[in-house]
Length: 258
Image 1 (cartoon, rainbow, N blue to C red):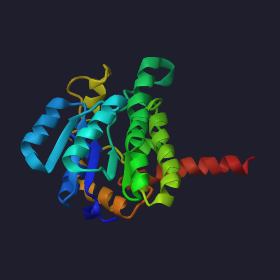
Image 2: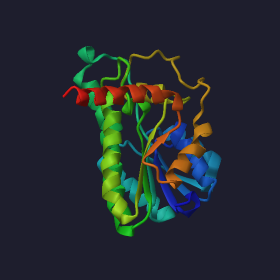
Image 3: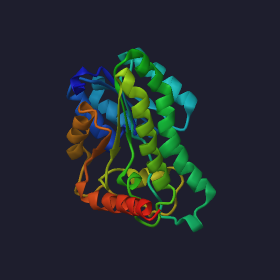
C-alpha cells in the first residue's frame, strides 16, 4: 500500500524521536495520526503545535486496559486504525547480567517486548478482519546482533520483537496485512531520558543522545518506503551489516560442526 492509502495511523512513543518523525512524515501524506506516549507534557506540546493534524493519547504500553481505551478514543476521532507502529521503548542501562536486578530485566521485557504484544493484541485481529493495513514495530540492530556487553535485557527484548514480527508476518500475510520490523542503530532520540523515566539511575542527568548526527527525521522517509514495499526487515544503519554477518557466520559454523 502507498502511505497515502492509509487512513489512520496509531504510533506509540509518538511524542518524540522516531515516533514523532514517522508521524510527521505520514501526516505529510495525508494520513491521520494518533500519537500515544507516556509523556503527557510532551504530547501536549506536540498537540499545541500541530493542532488538527494529530490526536494524542497518554499511554503506558504495559497497560492493557489503557490500550483498549486509547484505541476507542482514537477511532472515535479518526475512524478505524489501519497502520499500527509499535515504537515505544527504553534503552539498556549498561548493567551486565551478573549484576542486573530481576526488576530491571522484567521492566525491560514489559515495555520493549510485551508492550509490542499489547499493541498487536489490540489491533491485529481487526486489521485481519478488514483484509488491509500494516503493523510495524521498532526493534534495534541489537535485535539482530547483541554484540556488546550490557545488552543482557535489551538484546533479548529486541530479539523478541524481531521474532514476534517474523511470526506475525506469516500469520497476517494470507489476509493482506503487511508486517515490518524496523531495526535502527544509534540515533539522536530521547532514549536515555525515557530509560531514566522508568527507573534507571545509571545515567547522569546530562547524558543524552540528542547531539548525535543522525536524526530520526532523516530516516523517516526510508522507514515509510519500507512499509510501502512491505519489507519485513527495515534497516537504516547499513554500517551494522558486518556485525549481523558475523553473527550468522557463527550460526552457520555451528551447523557445519554438527
